[in-house]
Length: 116
Ligand SMILES: *[C@@H]1O[C@H](CO)[C@@H](O)[C@H](O)[C@H]1NC(C)=O
Image (tube, rainbow, N blue to C red; front, side):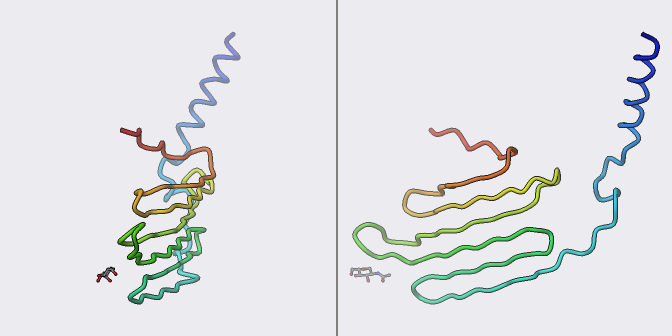
C-alpha cells in the first residue's frame, strides 16, 4: 500500500513538474506563409493561404443575383493543428441559408450551437 502511495505521489510530482506553458516547452521556428493567393472581381472572389505550422484556409465567394438568391454564396474550408496535436479540418458553405459547416475531422470539435 505504501509503495502504491509513493508511486502515485511520484507520478503526481512528475506531472506537476512538466512545463505548463507550451511556448516554454521548446522554441518553435517562426510560422511562415508558404502559399498565398487571391482574386477579386465584380462576380465574386477567392483566396487561399497556407502556413508552415499546418494551418490552411481557402474560400470562394460568388455574387448571386437570381430568383433563388441575391447576395454572396460562399464555400470554404480551414485546417489547423490544435495545441494537443490533433489536425482539425472544417469545410463550410455560407449562403442564403447561413453558415453551414459540412465536414469536420478531429475528436475535439467545438460543439455546434444548439438550433433555436
Ligand atoms: C439584380 O437583378 C435585377 C433583375 O435583373 C436587376 O434589376 C438588378 O440591378 C441586379 N442587381 C445588381 C446589384 O446587379
